[in-house]
Length: 222
Image 1 (cartoon, rainbow, N blue to C red):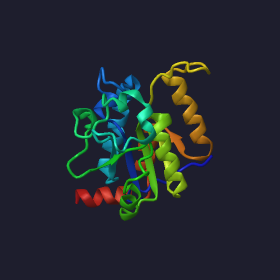
Image 2 (image 1 turned 45 degrees about the vertical axis):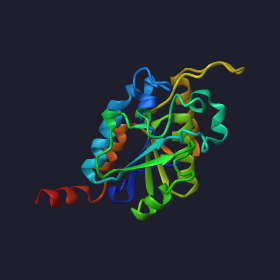
Image 3 (image 1 turned 90 degrees about the vertical axis):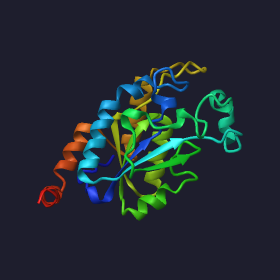
Image 4 (image 1 turned 180 degrees about the vertical axis):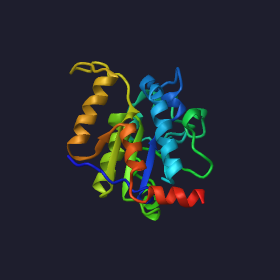
């Protein structure tokens, strides 16, 4: 277990994973009600990052209409049928309540991890980032995969427990799990050796007390 006590805004970036209409909008094919419920926490984290100059990078999971980039995700019926995550469709757009600003980067990905087959690492290195903050959906798939891949690349990882969420899991032979159970289990696993798992409130407090923050704010006001 490790703790990222010192959060330097100049070397930190927040990754907003797959907060797309197909996952968050009411009635969406891949709907995560918990993902929609945690939006206020994510909004608070976004406001903190924007206030302190922490870059916000969004990811959007999408596939070409012909399915040539599906790979084994062709075994997922809603995706394989083109019911969700089709490139260019309204469903792949970021949920309006947490939409990116005009200068914020949106990286399209085709697998769970935001690092796989994308230029995310190049962007982070170019920004001088050494710490990433993971938010979004779903906890155990795309958020977890992105956190693990960040850890493997020697980025410090902060995982916001109340600004990530998932869905209920059906019984496929080993018993079902509620979204809360899946979420909690993954937080326990990540906290063991991959990420500093904290609440949005803790994250905001650490940013506010980071060395140099007051001086930077004073310079902006002046």
